[in-house]
Each structure stands twice: as C-alpha cells, then as structure tokens.
Image 1: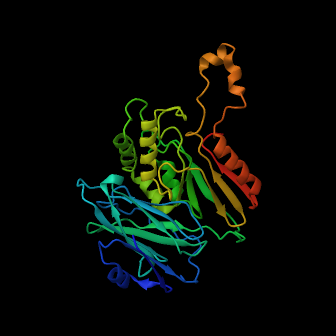
Image 2: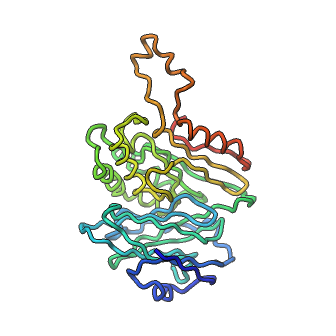
Image 3: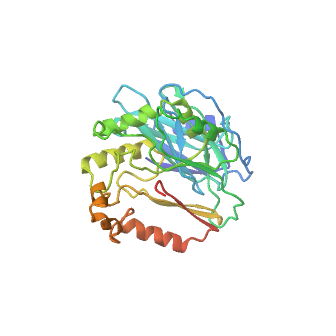
Length: 343
C-alpha cells in the first residue's frame, strides 16, 4: 500500500474520491489538520442501521495522541477480495475529510478490515465510516488521547467483562453508549465464551465473534466509544494457561486479533501501555497466555497446596512481569492504572 501526505487543513470529500479512485489500493493522510477545537464530547449518533455488508458494525481502538485503529468486517458469501473505502472527518456530515483511503478485505482475514489512522490532532473527537459494495457503514466516533506533556484535566472511562449472550443481552453496554462524557470503553476479557470442547478451530473461534456481534446493543457501544480490548479465558476455553494445545491457542489468538481494533498482529504481545497526557498511565495486562497451570483441588486438600505459594509460579510470565514493573517504576502520570481481568 502506498501512502500519500498532503499539506492541507482538510480536503472536500469529492476531491478525496477523485484522488484515490474507488478500488485502487492506497491511503491518504493530511497533515496540518484544522486547529479549531472540536466539541469536547460530541454526542454519538444512536440507533443507526448496520446495512449489508457492514452487519457487524464498526469499531475504533486504543486512543493514541496521533490516531487509532479502525475496524469493520464485511459479511459476504464470496471469496474474492473486496475494496473498502474509509473516511475520517471532524464533523458527522463528512463534508471535509481529514484522512481517508482504500484498503482490501480478504478471505484470508475473514473479510475483517483494519486501518491505522495517523496524523490526527491530540485530544479530539472525530467521526469515521467505511464504504464497500455500494453501501456505507454506520458512523462511528474515534478519540485521540492528549499529547504526552498535556495537562489533561480528566479521564473518564467505562470498563467491563464477562458478557454472556443469554444473561444480560448487553443492556449495560447500551447504557454505557448513552453515558455522557466518557473517553473510551475498556473491555477486560470474556468478550465471547468458547465451548471447552466444541470450539477448536479458527473457523469455530471466528464464528463466536460473528455471533456476538449480531447483538445490536453491542454494535451500538462500539460505534459510540473507542474500545481498549484485552482477552481472558472466555476467548480461548475455561481455565486456559500457557500449556494449552498450541494449535488451538494460535487459532483463538488469531480470531481475537482479527476481530478487535488492535494495531499489532497475532503473535505479538498484547499487553501494552496507554498514556493520557500527564494525568494517567494505563497498563493493560495479559493474565492468560503466559500464566502457569492452576493448582488442582486435590493439591489443596492433600498437603500439596504449598505449591500455590511457590515464588516461581507466575500469572504474567517473566517477560511481562518485568515489563509491568518497569512501566510502573517509570510512570510519569499523576495516576498509575492497571487494567486486569484478575483482581
């Protein structure tokens, strides 16, 4: 994919489409974006439809000072690559575009689409959408974080986990989507629930995310707020640890990476640190892929329970523990936060 940079404050949508050409792989990022501040917390557009092929909605990922990752998936029965247009604007009418381009949805990635958006101004809200196969997705909001040295006055986010299809029907997420003045949603895992015996292959794991995203209230919150995502054992199987079957673990991880607005690729460490100006540092940790196997109930009743106190045992693994220790030691924000699915 070839990148092009334009020195401009914005570009009319008609001109962007002329430059890119529909279906021509490419990307457009405009430097020198408008210095006029956007509304601090613009209201999301609620109750939008998700027309085919965008039946699983849209998502924006981790808020970074310069941009984020955008996500969608095309529902299609074919196997042919599909060209996808993406657009970012300061206004929901998309009259003037600040970033945009084309990418390709492929069968290899289950027709999921990820776009790395850069060159945006810090501490702003923007609007984004996709187009493909003659249809437009719903309009989502993305957020950029304050710059590293900015004196951010506040950080307000929602967090949750453990969303079973048949328990809550995502009513809480619907309330979060309508809660004013939130900066993002942090999901700490169990986004889906794999069957211990029935979910084994990549297609099985991909199907879980498709099934969950049929829920309209889940799609609603994703369009309204950026998502900071982490897995727990529900995305793998109950009680997963580092000793699990390699092929099954790899399939579960790949499906997660494909289905979430994460910037890196499957196989890379998922733990990471986010910064909110000089106010807060947030370490999001992985409590599953490197953890030691659990001590069985038999050990706890037969005198072998002391193994649970072995200082060599770990939930994070040696590398991640060292990383987290270093992040906390060097944190410069007023607050140091750790996002974990395990208390």
